[in-house]
Length: 269
Image 1: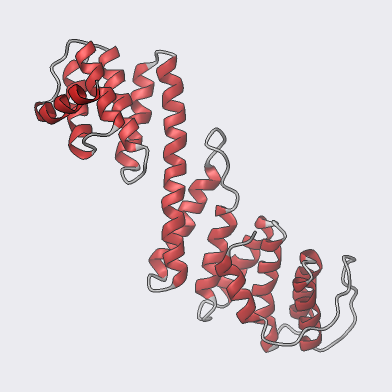
Image 2: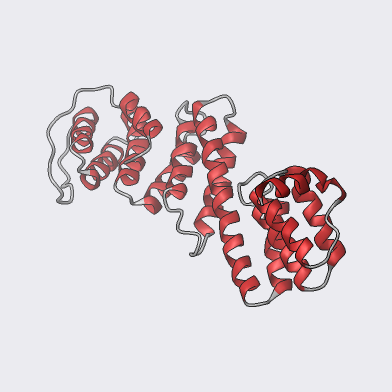
């Protein structure tokens, strides 16, 4: 399912009655009016024949490059590629639209659709996250350029999800190093989560894993300090309970602000 804001923009753009579809074959050159070709492209789009729609929208510009329909057709061609999951072609078309029409009132939507074309390809945390980085950059650009738009508000929500995704990969790698007893490498990953992704849901676990790694290296002062940060920011969380128990088991005096936690533990156990 495509994103509702993208569909909303599509409905606004298709303000003319549609003609008939012409199938999946390559569009032959038959000289017609811009409106006629555009309507046929709109019909193909509504029929979910996205490849044909993209070709027909491109045909509008090819036959009538200076027509008022050409600019709209460029954007709709990008949308058809997006709907067809052909994200690279969508991005190429959107970059071209932005370059050729920087003053268009559709530029905010073009930037937003471009960001979605990266966002839709975010993969599992176990895989390469280069596309997530691209999505993060593109979504941030939407927020920066068009802060008062609905596109910016949706981009902000998606940006938070991309940050959580990137933090999740760092956590996955860090846990792997931790289980392999490669504590310094693990610490580097967990510190990145705390420093770069401090607003994500992974920070409490990252602080706990840092405490665990420091204890494994015999760095008790660092472990105690990290546990104190965890307790201060996430008091009573399961991760703080685990860190507190680790300190006790290792014979390390817990942080000074752990009196309330000690009472909590007495109640739990």
